[in-house]
Image (cartoon, rainbow, N blue to C red):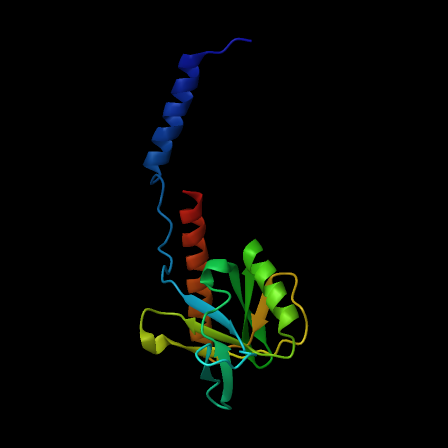
Amino acid sequence: MNFYARGFNLYLLSLLLSLLALGGCQSAPKKDKHLAMLRIHVENRAQMLGSGETVTILRSHPVLVTINIEPFLTEANIVAAVLLETPGGVAVEIKLDEVGTYTLEQYTAAYAGKHLAIFGQWNERVADSRWLAAPLLNHRIADGVLAFTPDCSVEEARQLVVGLNNMALKLSTEKAK
C-alpha cells in the first residue's frame, strides 16, 4: 500500500484554509450557567428534641411538616432534571445517580405514609429559594426518578431545572478530574 504524505498534507492544508475562509470554528452561543440547589428532607418520625424542625410548605394552602434537619438527598445526587408540562402547570422530574437511587429507595420504603419536604434555590438571591413541595410517600421508588409539582411559577421552575442540570454537569466534570 502506497501512502503519499505530501499529497495528504496538501489536502489537509487546503481543507484548513477553506474552513478559515468560511469563518472558521464558531463558538457555541453562551448558555445560562447559573447553578441551583435542591435539598430533600424526610418527615421526622421520632419527634426527638433537637432532631427536627417544623417548616411551612406551599403558599396557597400551607402544610406544616416536621422534618429531619439534614437532607438525605441533595443536588449532588442529581444526574438530570426535566421540566414536564402537566394540566395544572408544570412538574419537575429529577433522575438520581446510583447512590441517590439506592438512598431514595431505602427512604421511600422505610417512611411510607410520611412526607418528603423539598427545598429549592434557583438563583443566587435568597429570595429565589423556598420550600417547593411536600409529596406523600405512598410507595417505594426504586427507579431513581422523583417527580413533584413545585410551588413556583413556570419561569422559576425552568430556572430550577436549568440550574440543576448545570450543577450536575459541573459536578460530573469535577468527578472526572
